[in-house]
Image (cartoon, rainbow, N blue to C red):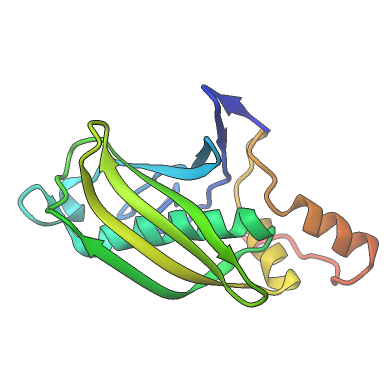
Amino acid sequence: MTTTNDRTWLPTSEPCFVCGEKNDAGIKTQFYVEDGRVKAPLEAKPHHCGYHNVVHGGIVAAIMDETMGWAAARAIGRMCFTGELTIRYLRPTPGGCRLTVSAEVGRIGKRLVTAKGVLEDGAGIVYAKGEGKFVPLSVEDTLAVDDALIYRGGEEQVFAALRDTAEHDNTIPARIPPSK
């Protein structure tokens, strides 16, 4: 697991709108864990703005959703999908400056994980707050997502324990590498 400046990085993907390395329209952020919270930098480009230098609310919602989703996934060792998302926009979010989303898990239930997130700048100005309810994917679906993630060496292996258990118990079929 690579740790730099007390940050542990999470894997990325190619197509994801939020962290996708090959999605030219996307945000292209990289998630990391710091002080027990999942975080993601946001430096919105002009094409992420709804009007001049104000980040579109959908962009804010997308990065907050994904950051809270990673917090939920880390907490339970399974990838999740969003069951419910609430964003409270407190002020217009400026484009072209360095902002950070941070998220943490609230409650872990049998079928649902709740998380909270906040989007702020380095001076502590909060632009948006969010809450989400996340539903765990099956073991098979989680491992399929994991197979499509990009690990360059050192990123946190969020689903390693799940993979080890599933392979040991022979509860998953042989995996087919993702298509390129």
